[in-house]
Length: 433
Image 1 (cartoon, rainbow, N blue to C red):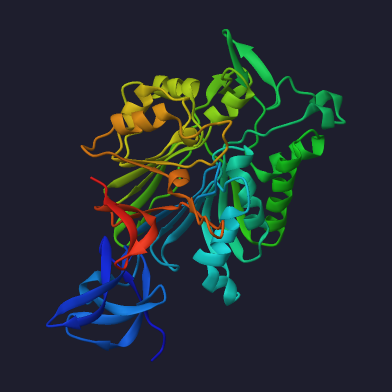
Image 2: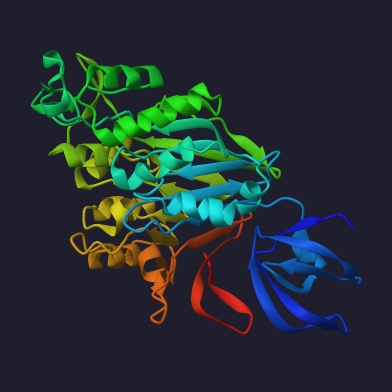
């Protein structure tokens, strides 16, 4: 029998060692919606024998289908952000990365676990979209190895268009900027950043003029190589005026709304409002993305901060495009947030991605508390990659704290791995409602 695979289509499915009188006996595994299982020869009227994650067992046939729905993996990249999203199958679906963390955690996870089959069989993995919320190391450094890797092809890399410079490096006196983000001007007592890039050609032009930070030069080189090798199709800046085409997947609409950054009109053209200092400006103009699959919504806000959230609230006024069922906490659970913006997001569940960097103390107590307070749920859910992480005291091996999300466009479940598996159930699992 040729290898046949099916996908779990219920919110989760229990797998049993045996079946008697149409009832599963002795549970040996639990798999989440969207997981693939290998079909074996044995079956009954209502049950199918399968292999799931190396274990044989019996699963009800009505829990199996042909194409996964919405899957999101909040990968533990320690002090940084990364989300891998898969919707549908390889032929008709989408694969998306939102940020990449500060190190090689993401590339190791993809090559050693998520796409090990592709690597072992020398197959390519195609990412339709890669979104870089902003060019801080903890959001994009981990993408450089992936962009350089010939195992990956990429449709479009989207970014916010703000580069980082070091004036001491430049050999062009005319390119000496008055901030590390470029040229700042003043209009009506407000400061605006006018240095920006839209395309790869404009990024290359900034690099040629000198002064770009070493890490951004390394990223630029990787993007150029991928483009020249035919592995990258597009490289584009996003703001709230840009749109991304919707797509019908498994007869459900998938869309991405770009809610930020919101640019301002100046005499020099559209520019970024300057928030307090360089760090607040590049963080505050992160990409803000609202994903929708079927009836459910998911918000990714990069490293938004207090002046940025006030800027967005002022722009959208009485409208509230930010409400979402699940939100990725802005800025790793920092205290830099407004309760007004949190109240507008109003999620059922929040995910905080952070690491053990004690100088930041993320996630902060007020961020965790407010994530629970400003919610639609009677039992709000707050997940943390850092809190989900554990280590074996005997071997000192780290068990990374990935947060899993699954949705069929109506139901949402979220889960993290238990530190110790008992009773054939490896998941600490919740329904989002």
